Image 1 (cartoon, rainbow, N blue to C red):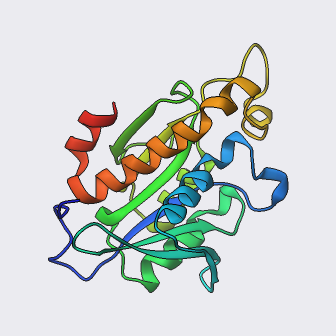
Image 2 (cartoon, rainbow, N blue to C red):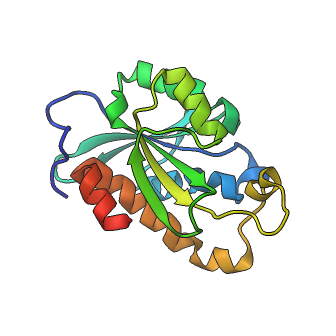
Length: 199
């Protein structure tokens, strides 16, 4: 992989945050696809998560030919309190907001589709809302992993806290892998090339 646009010139590491809820009860639910992508990234590089004092499970990776330092985190709090642990990490490791990538589930995107952007609103996503409030800025990267809208009259909160259905589970590993590829591409190639590749 080639050098990303903002790596060697700064000591600030990249921070990739996979959103989800802690505990076995939520492990396989739609709301936890951010955790799944974080797990995929860490597995690829033979890393492991460890508890960190910032209320995160944290792993450190080295990406690409330049051995880019990348922190991968899963907040240990529930989704709507994700901002505190993320803010603590950005402060502790002096992470710039243009090197923060948040991976999250997205209702307004079809299942197995991705959208990548920087900034914007939270779209009613409680994890993003908490992060934006706590870091004081919305101008960070988002890898939006589509989960689609609930069928019929199903309540949204019930839908996101349920596991993927049997058909989706067949495609889910590829969806997770593609999202992890998009994270790597953001770090090594930048936003526009990544959007062109994955949109």
